Length: 480
Image (cartoon, rainbow, N blue to C red):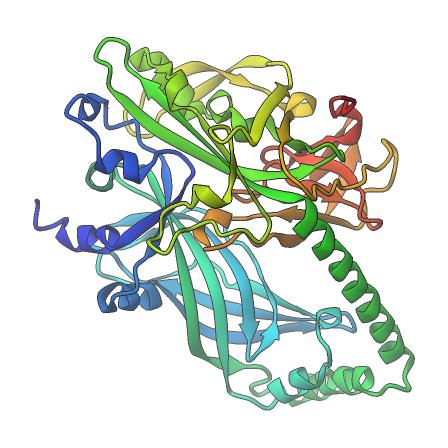
């Protein structure tokens, strides 16, 4: 091995694949000499978990550094902070494409840390700051009390904890080494960070303290309003949690591309979310979750360029109910706890019709430009599956014109990177645009196929791709 690549190899060799956006590490580790004949472009995004040994723990802690937290703004609904973040160097220049955060707390206070989805470079052997600080919002209705925020005003250091997902685009040599174009590394963090709230701004501090004091006084109108909002939010969260744990499934689709001339094949995979929509166990998800090759321009380009075909024997579907064990103790996907086609407990009934359209594609590695056929999705981006089992609880569907606000996704963002299938409630902003429902931000990996529920907990749409959702009016018939 090139000694220049060795540090990078050590880091990623310590990683354990727990979810594949495209490609499957276990298959590639076992591939035969025939399989190794496939072109190196047949690689995609992988999610790795760093192992628990000392070396990788050190890498995991040092990969993302939180440098300082500063005050940004305050109102009677929320406190805004800015978080300066830097990423530590790898063995060579690397491009980070996305940072996603889960379960973040600042000195025990739950916060919402902004997703960062702009490409930027990590320089070789040099830490690099994100181009801009991340916005961190503390929503008062998330808190049992605003008293901890009053204490923050006087602190100069805080503890920030949580989990981040760092998506990295590999360059050509790195891609050849780990046989992937992108990796996503879950990084747990717990760091003490300098807090600069009101340095040399005493009047601003007085104003902020006044806001928090008013919210802390139960006799004030603002405090009473906040208490009502908190109670309503808790009730909604509890109701949606019950719905999600009874109805939402984490889906896994594995497929293989085969070179008919050589017999070489390579496995790919896609994860997503689905939900029970009828009492007899019909499950709705996005078509792109169970037929991902129709929506991926890179895969379409490779199939056309290398004359690859789908291998019917390489297709596999699995669905884990909420709360089920996803990983075995050894870190492999635990299909024993899932419903699968092999067990005849999961079946594809029908999918939305294909709507193939030509799209321009530029391959970042070869520089080639091609026209590829992709499914446009839109209102036909749905799939109907059948589950076999007891205690199947459907989610109620809303009317075609019912309000979409407030909107929440019940989904598994980056779900297969965790040991169990724990659905998340992801609050989003949604709007109707003709026959479509559109979100204000792109979906995260694992959220496609998720139910978008309104304030009444009824499904108004299912998440498709990018910012698009399929409204209930486009769902297939659920009649037996």
